[in-house]
Length: 436
Image (cartoon, rainbow, N blue to C red; front, side, top):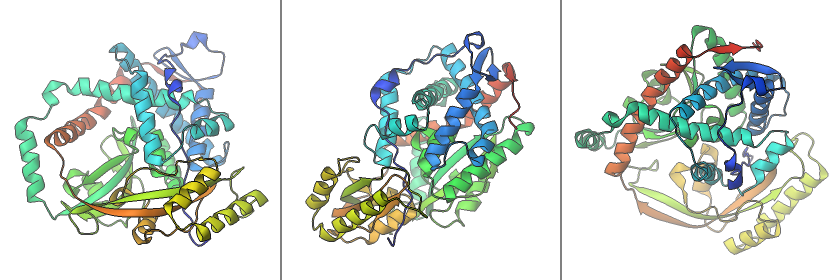
């Protein structure tokens, strides 16, 4: 097996799980041990443990490891922030409906090319309540609506704002752009800084070991890009914090940064690609769209690379046989069907410029049409892909509506930390156990 790419199979939670109501448990109703009380609302140690186990799942860790235990103080701080956000959502009468939650989960599924049901199975196997993720996604959506109310109509970009941005884009055509992912970790007080830094270092360690950046960002980033897996998209250096801008101009593609101090906290950055404005990263003013098929063969237990089970050896041998015998995309699709369609054979059109990590993008760039890729081995199974066709499409610039949304979202981001800081100052927060 000459090529190894760590891939975590996370699927969208089925839509019915979105029916979990957005309620806040009161302290007097709880029998579980209490970790913190936020304006009279309780956060239990079970809540902290659930989130820690979710992190273990997302990074491929086993629950209860020293790494996960070290993250619990920061996880508690994150839960406190989320509880403050949820209380503000309820105070403002904002309702996040099931369709919005299902749509957000569907985006996670699409971005990770997953079949329905896998995440629910993994969460329950780890003893994690699936409602942990549902509640977090619902709060993220509601919090974005709070911030939009805070910014208000006066924050909406005017025609003049949009025209200036269009002119700026025209003037900067050919200038370097960077495809950046971010994980933002807020620091609400000087006392919280050491814990935030320890949390960031642990996250970075897992990311560099192969944990998927979009999933970690969606789970732990508290920036406005969390629902997009931390994706900032293509930006110029002048659109980034100066410290981040200096870093990304020097980073290799695929690299994960050390913690970077920014206003309101610290950020972890991944450079996903570079290009010139108005061009793709291969230098052409076009997008390369791939039509692909994939086969996925699951393992019956998590993979231990040093000691694979017989089932895992047999599964990898089976994939090797498919690699040799498959001559067409129909063959790959048939092999995936025979394996139970655990993951969809057809993930839909793939924009090569948006493929991450960089190693996988390089593999697809160099893979001839009609040839099966080397095995892609993950903890839960092994897969291979075949490119059926490559199409070149003219690159289309953003519309005025898209530019307006981008400008407004940047203004929302500026309001996020200030609003959360205000909630901390105005609230009553008691940490019942010092997990530091």
